[in-house]
Image (cartoon, rainbow, N blue to C red; front, side, top):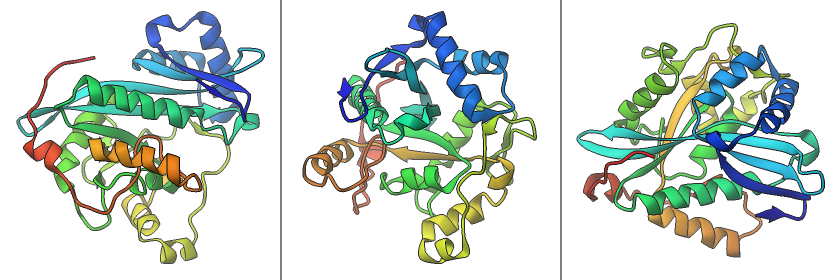
Length: 271
């Protein structure tokens, strides 16, 4: 897959096929943009993931961006569902605006959807900034936490993946992940939230109320369901509404359509 506008090539690579040179190039990018990190921390976190989306410069084949991913089973009541967690995502500043990661993530989600055709599929993410939360809220009609309290039934799955991926860091009282003062974080300030932004956007206001300590690095764990119709509408938007800015996997639709979890048969299995 290629993105000629940014002169890059992109592909998915399982962790077991990552080379020492790949690791060296990724860590160089990582330490440039993240504070409070070491190679040991980077390798330990990388070892917990199943694969990566890699962005390479077309001419030099040097890695200029990457995003980690984990595919895991979750329990939703008596059903087994699938969750795709997207972790650290970093792109060199010179390549900002490249949409290759969006395309790779969409295709990965679609392949997972087809691999488990009768199993509900969810996107898992954590957010210490409102922009990441909006990526979920603006592109998934069924998501938690929701400003209107919808889909609170997804909350147990959020606790599950937090306890699995980040043991000992989930605060059940605040419903936040708190990694402490030593948590690695992006250099510089996270995008600020102004009073005007809160007045104009109920979603931004809700994020601020849900994660009031985001400036200290606490993360709001979230989840969104990706159904078949969501994928169709994403493609439709890409073909006929190119001016829009879709999220990494699916695009929003107004209806509340929850038959995939509540009405579908399930298929167990692990990746």
